[in-house]
Each structure stands twice: as C-alpha cells, then as structure tokens.
Image (cartoon, rainbow, N blue to C red; front, side, top):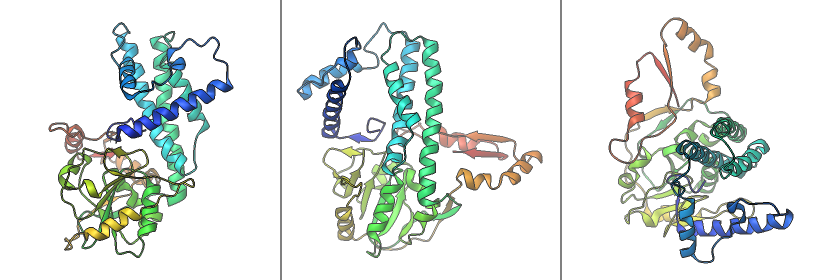
Length: 358
C-alpha cells in the first residue's frame, strides 16, 4: 500500500519495511526447504547498506530487462498495480478485523507469477483477469466491514464551507481513523472536516451522528498545497493522496498508517490498534482555527449501492421512458499537472440523459 502513488515519501519508513521483509523471508526459509528454488528474487538477501540497496533496486526497474517481451512486461506491470490496489483495501479491511483468505492466497500466487519466465502472455492475461476478480472480492470484503461498523451509506447533505473555531481536516479514506478521531475530539470544541477521498464518509450514519463532523474542506487532492497554505488548523493524512508539504503548514500536518513524509509527525497505533491523536488535538486548539463562519453551502453524498438500488424501479422506469439513455462509470481522478483533468471534462460533457457511477 505504501508504494502506491502519493502515499509514503519517507525513506526511513521504507527502510524499516524492507528490513522487516528480510526477517519474514528468513523465518519462512526455516520452515520450508529452499532446495530446488532457482528464482533469484526468492534467494535474494537485503543488502546491509542503503547505498547497496539503491544499487540493487535498479535490477527491479521496469525497463531493466531490455530483452523482455514488451507485452509480457506490460501485463506484468498491470497485474502489479492491481495488487497494489488490492493491498490497499486488504490493509484497511484487516485494520477493522476483516479479511479474505481467497484474496490473500491469490496475492502470493500472483507475486510468484510476476517472476516466472515460463508463463506465456496468455497465462498472464488470464492472471490479469483474475486480478480484477480479486479486486472486486476485496472491495466487497471492505464494503461489508464498513457497512457493518458504520451502517449503509444514505443520501446526506454536506456543508462545503467553513465554520468558526478550531478544526482538524481528515484526508484519505480510512474510516476507522476518522472514527477514532471523532471519538477523541468529542466535547473539545474542535470541528472535524473531511477532505478528498474522505468526503463519502458523511453518508455513513454511525460517523455522521457526530455533530462536530461539520463538513468537507477544499477541493481535489491536487490543490492541497494551495488550500492548506498557512491554514490555522491541523491536517491528518490517513491514506493517499499526499503532496510535498509547504513550510507554511508542515508543523500542523500529521500522517498515520501507511502515509508518510520525511520531517512530518507520524501517529502510530499501539498493540491493540488504538491511536492516540492528542498531539493533533492539542495543536489544533493552539492554532485557534477559523475566525468566522461562512454561509452554509451544501452538496449531496451517500449514494452507495444499497441506497441507489433502493430506487431501482424508478431508474428502470426512467430507462423505459427514455429519460435515461446512458450509464457511465468513472473510476479515476484528475492529475496534479495542468491539463490532466480528463475525468472532470468527461463528466461535464456526458449527455443530460445520463447517470454517472463512480
């Protein structure tokens, strides 16, 4: 998860995980025989120095083997990115004590396949399709977990303007982190805003019940450097997307879970999975927050699959009557660089007789 785009930029955090992976590998070697194992990846031992690790890293580069069939390289990398996505949802599901043995077993199978030069292009394409299937499976696992803990999302109005007072902005999409922060800030006079991919959390009744979850701050992730500039409150990053912090808010930016950046404070969990956000809370109170209320401006969220399917008959009738002629699935987000706004443009240009699923 931490190797996904805009998640963790802290070299020390990656170094810690690399050393942990070597410990796991050594423990596994004691349990099974390594006789007959020829894959260099399985026999590799982590180098002792950071410099040597970086030198070894070149061998794992996408284009390192210039003689590899480009189609095989492409499918392998697509599978790899699929596995990164699976790991993200698996990580969050496991944090709230849910998992899928089916997905976990596939993960090892797919990782091994990525270094198996005996597999043909057809073999890898079949594995790619299975990667998609397991992605849906782990989405279902996490969805079941979230619905069980926080009840199914329902259409909910969300204020997108600010309120007077101290505040903490919660970005990413780890609902458990948001819940723990809401519990720890109850009665402290601190407003909690969502940001980015945390916006849909307002639709969950067991999260929306907290009166100090007051709204959503800002716009898309790629605007955070401008929107967080000199902000009089704190930001907690629970997952992607994190951009390089400006000096003007680095001291009030906190990371947790897999997120990280060198020189920003990180909140770890204890052996029971609990996180102490008191440092974030105290900093928010110290900063004082916004001085004035803005006029309330609301948007509607919470159209999860259960809420949407409860109107299935209405949707079907709209299709039959010709009022709805198109369904579009938008499964991506715009980029940070100017011009990378394909998904926004796409949504703006679809016909009015369309329904967009996202």
